[in-house]
Length: 142
Image (cartoon, rainbow, N blue to C red; front, top):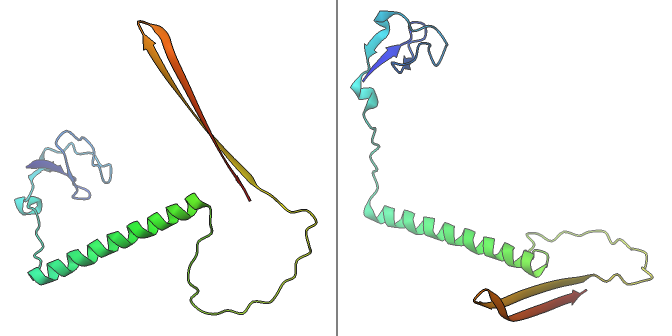
């Protein structure tokens, strides 16, 4: 491959460039053309010195790691979906001071309402023949 070598920084540039892509110097000199060493373009291979048993062990460890991540993601999704706080086993027992809170006179209630509606329409020859409307309401009070 023939390319232009920058006389200032020795950076290789395509033939159509008039200025160096690295330092911005002009590439107008006719002696700036130089062939690139083919060894620099050769793909590099890195030999793996693993036995088939080690490859199987590596594959098993990778599969186990992916499965663990999938389980954790599923658990997090379910916790969000169910609206509960994450439950994790405590690592160490920590004593915390007891804090007394003032009594609340009125209980706080939270109501979540979800409304879903589906409309099915049957048309024949450009006219509405039949229409079914299904409405579902879910309500959760805490």
